[in-house]
Image (cartoon, rainbow, N blue to C red; front, side, top):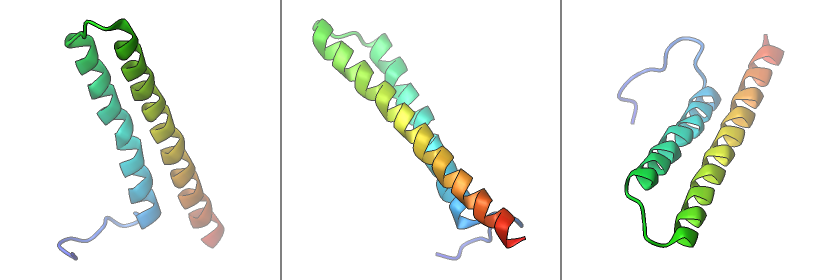
Length: 78
């Protein structure tokens, strides 16, 4: 939308990697919410927590890979 400019040294790859890492905070807020509002079914609660933790782990891995590739390409260009 071109509403603003990125800071100097910031690339689209670094921005996408940062956005992917924000998924960790989102899934952890879901995890905390599942601890506060307990369900009566133990199996459902376990499945929910497992999905949240796996989503957080996946978000961290994807964010790391994007940032690593972004900074690796930036260093090779220098």
